[in-house]
Image (cartoon, rainbow, N blue to C red; front, side, top):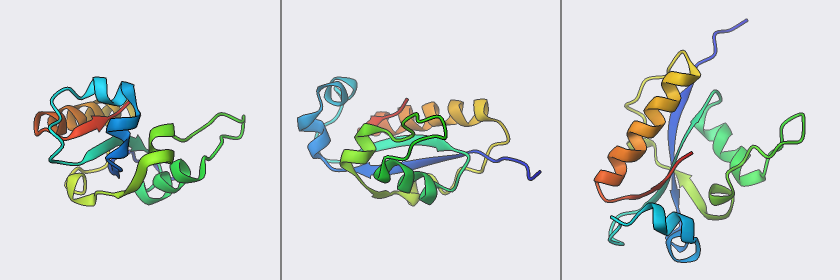
Length: 116
């Protein structure tokens, strides 16, 4: 069985998310409207496959929704320049930790960021 690798990825969101989604707005008081709105996630798939799952509203075998409603509604495209430098991780826990680190780093740079 091939070894599973986990990757962190970034999706650019439409700026409409900031005006239309109260929770997103409240999570990003530092946002000044100049930079982009972003979603930071983690996946065992390729970032491209994961983005397609979000946009298509994919369901798991048990019928659970696999897509973030924010990415499904507002996701525009992957922002490789913000994550390609991060190597894959061998555990889900490491990837989740990096997802949070990257999201908070981007917020400090004044992007508006959503992550789980």
